[in-house]
Image (cartoon, rainbow, N blue to C red; front, top):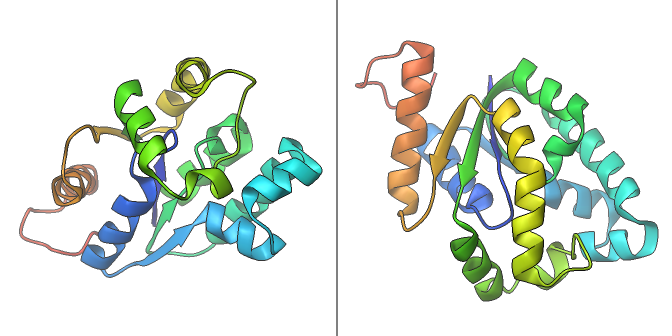
Length: 183
């Protein structure tokens, strides 16, 4: 079984995923990093040179590859849910947790994150705040469809988010609270 973290940009997928992997003694994989490393260019450069369809194809291939593994925490790109095949892949090989945050928090995190320019190319022709609102509105039903569990990350510590994820996994797996490694 794998654990897939989905959600919009800057909802904590990578940060929480790395912490969860350490706590669970599982491997950590970030599909965006995987795509960039395989291509040898940043996601922003890939999208600028080849467009979003090429990135989405590479993203799907990365997810298919990682999904053959086991005991991995996988941070996915925010748009992974745009392809129905990706949702099916994640649900067949593990549990899917949707990390959410308010638009205000997402905007603040995007503006504070130095990685935004190279790894988060613009998704629309709108300003950042309007883009967050419109993209979230479009993706929300897809995140809902894919998710086994939803966890809000607004103003929470990484440790408390990890506790919530692990507790949810224990409930879904029928494991008792005394076991530290899931499952």
